[in-house]
Length: 372
Image (cartoon, rainbow, N blue to C red; front, side, top):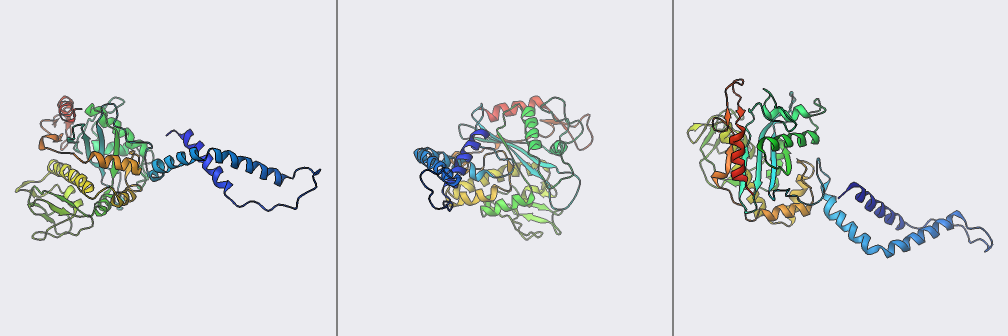
């Protein structure tokens, strides 16, 4: 909906509201030959305008309802307007970002989770993760990030770098264009969350059940470490405390963040946690779907609007559209990838603990698994 159209509708609604106000007190009637008083002229003007609005009543009511249904829930940061747009390729593709921001002050804000997820027309879902330590990442306008890691690019685009609490929507949009260019695929929307938002959203849906490819033991998290058992349909929650083994941790945040210790007896790392993130997000989709699209969806929207930074229109109509396309989604292991070394990235010629993308390999995977 264009700004000028919204302005015209808003003007009509304001005028209609003003005409519902009680009439102003007037003086006693003047003789017939007396000139019309300003008050009477205003009353005649209001009466005429009221008649005109009455004639247009059905149109205004219909337009006002459209505005309410489409725009009113969209009062959130970065939010777009209108309906859900699948772009030119017919797929719904979203860049998901997880920030390491927290209340503790430090320099910068890093996007440690960078996942592009697409839902194809046949119902298949595919996940592609860009590791945070990738360098020489392509920019949409030409050039690369140099030896700066990809997880710092959003912060480099922020116009007010000293304002850590604030989020720069234009910087998120610019980084989205970079990812789109690097993967050579259309990205329709972006969405970014911080730690506390993630916790609250999990609490909003109650819990998320996922299969733990474990056991996972990480002594670096928390004061005493964490332990996730090797269980299917394991329940993860938002605000959940954790203690070391043998106590079971149920913190969803710790589950998607853990990258040290061991997983299934082998070394845990960034790449393994990225695959766990894919499964968790997919399981969260199924959890939202299982709760129904009534009051539960409305309640979830209330939690999303002020706390998730996204250009997806935050209206109930769009929420219902997304809910609808989640009905037949499916995910196979072959449709999940982390673009790490050595298949999709190389560590030669770059600083230690970083690697540069093999763009032809990455784009080939996207072409096959994102499809149409």
